Length: 79
Image (tube, rainbow, N blue to C red; front, side, top):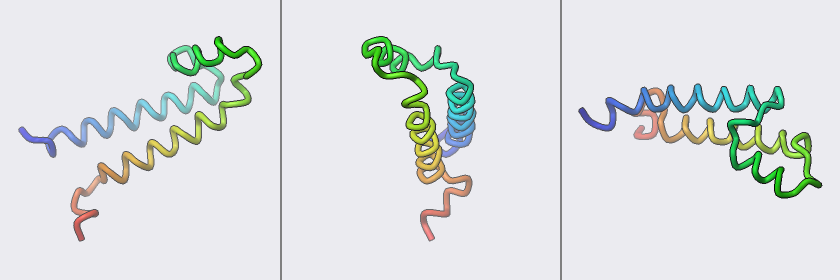
C-alpha cells in the first residue's frame, strides 16, 4: 500500500468531519470545538454569535485547501 491508496479515504473522512463541524457551528453546538469553547470561556466579552461566521469561513477555506491538495483526480495538478 502507498499514500495514493489511503488518500481517498482520508479525504472523505476530512470532508465529513468539516461538514459536521459546519453544521454544528450553524446550529450553535460548539461542544466538540474545544479551542473555541475555551477561548469563549476565557473572554466573556466575546459571544459565539460574534465569531460563528469566522469559524464557518475557516471551515470552508479548509475544505477548499483539501480539495486543492487532494483532488479527486490526482492528475489534475500535473497537466
